[in-house]
Amino acid sequence: MSINDLPIIMVRCLVLTIIIEVIVGIIIGIRNKKDILNIILVNVVTNPIVVSVPILIYLYFGYKYERLSLYILEIITLFVEGFIYLKVLNYKKLNPFLISLLLNLSSYLIGELINYL
Image (cartoon, rainbow, N blue to C red; front, side, top):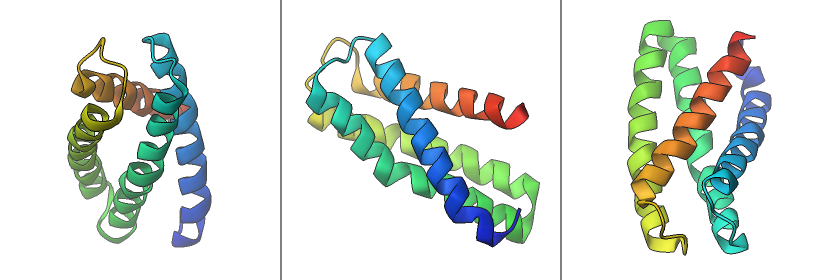
């Protein structure tokens, strides 16, 4: 992997994340088009940071620090997205932070599975 691969990796990760999180959102009962759009827009903002920063850290400092930065960024993202969902989602059947946890955990785990295969 090189720095030149970063744009392709970022686009692939963003598209897969949006697909996974929208599907999981629909599974948990989010059906409002505005709520689905908000899930997409939140990921357009947060995903590039969560993907690019660990890759850059990996390239310059190695795997150990890449994983640490990824976990820290995922936790921060969980709370940031939860707060955004609290403010913008019309779906009120689940706590917005639980929604954020479910969506992010599913996209992270499925992404790890895809990378493993």
